[in-house]
Image: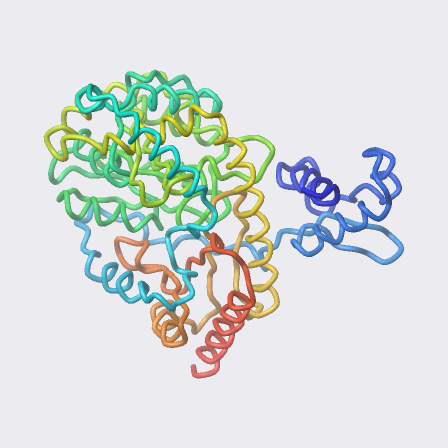
Amino acid sequence: MRLYERLANDLEGLIRDGTLPAGARAPSIREFCRERAASAASVVRAYELLQARGLLESRARSGFFVAGQPARRAPRSTPAGSCRRPWHVEVSQLIFQILESARQRDALPLGSAFPSPELFPLRQLGLHLAHVGRHPDPWHTIEDLPPGNLTLRRQISQRYRLAGASVSPDEIVITAGALEALNLALQVVTKPDDVVAIEAPCFYGCLQAIESAGRRVIEIPTHPQRGLDLDVLESTLQRVPVRACWFMTTFHNPLGVTLSDAAKQRLIQMLSARDIALIEDNVYSELYFTRKRPRITKVWDSRGLVLDCGSFAKSLAPGYRLGWVAAGRYASDLWKRKITTSLATSVPIQAAIAHYLSSGVYERHLRRLRRTLARQQALMVAAIRKHFPGDCQYALPTGGYQLWVELPEHCDALSLHERALERGISIAPGPIFSAHQDHRRAIRLNYGHPWNAASETAIARLGSLMREQMQSR
C-alpha cells in the first residue's frame, strides 16, 4: 500500500470510530505533515482520496472537514404495524421467485447476498485443501464427526477471544454453513407452533427457516440507524409467550445497523431474566471498517443462552459451506441434532480451513478485505448521491457489504426489481425481508463486488427508473 493510502486509511479509521465526528475540522495539511512526517504531496493525495470516499469535504479558506451523515435524511422507522400478534410465515414463494429471477448470469448482482468471489484467497485455500488431501489422517473420518475438527474449533475459539468473548471449543459445533447452524439452533430451542421474535425487516433466510419449521413469528421493529427496538421487545415479552429470539445485532442484514454495546448488554439481561434463548446470526462481524471489532452479544452471555451462528462464507471461503454454532448450554443437544440430520460436515473442508487458519495469514486477508469493502461502499454511495432522486434515504453501515435504501414516494420496490432485471440489474426488494411483505418502498443493494463503469451505469439506470415511477403517478 502506498503512503498516501495508509494515511487516508488511518484518518478514515478516526472518522468511522467517531474520534473525528461529522462536522469536525480535520487536521490541516501542514499539521498532518508534521504529525506523520509525510510530504505535503502525500497528505494532499490522502485528503483527495477521502473526499472521493465521501468522508471529507473542502471548505474555501477554512480547510477540510468531516462530511456530514451521508443519509439525505434520517431513514424512516419500520411501519408501526410491524409488531403484531404471532403469525405463521408464508413468504417462500415470493422469495424463491425473486431469487430465481436474479440468478441471470449476465445480471449485475446488486441484489446478491454474496460478495464477489474475486475478493477471497481461493487459490491459496485450494493449496491447503490439496495439502490435507495428500496427507490424510484416516482417524479424522471418525474424530471430525460432530462436534467437528478439534483444531478448527480451537481456531474459532481464538477468534471469539479476539472479540472479547470466552467460548470454549467444547461448545462449538461445526456445520455445513451458517444456514444449517441457524436451522439446527431453531430446532433445538423451539418446537412446532412456538413463537419466535424476529427483527422487522430481517434476513429472508430466517423467514424461510421459520416457515419450514412450522414456528410462528412476532416482528420487532428495527430502525436503520438505532437497530432493534428494545422497548417494543420488552413489552412484547410481557404479553407474548416468546420461546426464542432470532436476531442479527452486528451489521444487520438487510439494514446494516449494529446495536450499541449498551443495547446488546440490555438485550442479554432482558432475555436472561426470562430464560429465553437468543439465536444470533453473526456472519458479518469480521467485516468491520472501524479500528476495533464490534463486541458481540456472546460477550455478555453468562448463562449460555446465546447460540452464536457464524460462517466463513462471507469472510473467507464462499462455496466451502463451513459454519458453526457456539451453542452455550445447548451444545450437547445441538451436536446430537446435527448427527441425526446430516451426520457430519465435510471432513476435508474442515481440515483445510483449520490448516489455513493455523498458518496465520487469515488476519492479513481480513484487513485487505475490509479496506476493499469500505472503498467500494464509498464509491457506491458517491454514485447514489449523484444519480438517485434526492428523496432517497440511507444510512451508512460501518461494516458488511449491504446498503438499505428507502425509496421516494410513488416508488414500488417490486416493480423496480422487475424493470431493473429487464435492463440486466438485480436488486433485492424490501418485501422479501418481511413476514408480512412490508417495505414496498425499500431495496437492498450489494457493494461487495468490484466497482467499475458497469456498476456506475447500473446505479444511474436505477435512478432513472425511480424517476419514471415518480412521474407516472
